[in-house]
Length: 324
Image (cartoon, rainbow, N blue to C red; front, side, top):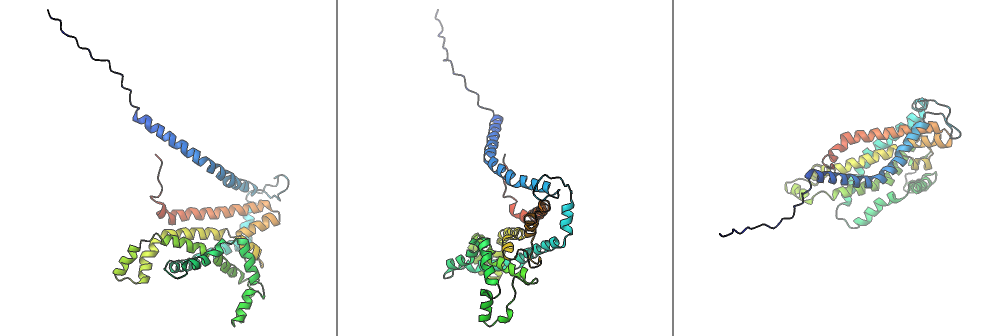
């Protein structure tokens, strides 16, 4: 009787189970959150410590009539805010900031666009011209204010230049005339900040494909038509960013005005920031000055929100990515 051969298979090692897909996704999300926390925590600490807490402290001080010394005992509630808005000087300061903001958009924007289009062409000495236009922006506000204060004083450089070219009748008390001082300051502001707008727009012009200009030229469009219908629409995002920065800067204007005029003569050039410093630090009305600071913050914050909602939203849609 023949015995049948019994064949046995060698034992196979157990196959390790692959990790579940759900567990992998959870670990990936956890790792992403840890990385975000590690990267964002220092910035959040600085933001809370140097932005949110000072805003909260200013809001708290604004509810008191406090001179900066001793405990906070004289609670006035919203009295400081009512006093600020009912004062003619503060109302005028708000008006001055708005005038500077409007003039910046109406005057500086076309001038910046024109200079940027000119300096974007292939000209001899283009680099030098760009440097000349941008150089005033590099100067500090204090240096700029002192330079122009010396040039605009009676008998100064500006007056002598006008007399030298036969325009002595145009000589004015540039910083002492109540009806003229604000517009004189705007000229100085334009000289100081026009370079920033030009450089920003030049950067935007680098993103305009030359093929579009060539196609427009082949279709018979003139240089003006190409600029109006091709270049300017593509510069839209850059222009909107410039307008935002210009208006915010106009609302917070302080250095040049404070050094050149101290808000005078007779408060004719007072801005919200100079009004704040005058009352908060020179007159030791820290509670009232804190209320003015909160008002200035709210105005800038509301403008930023509305501008983001109605102007910048089209530029940011699709640019933000969510973390999953």
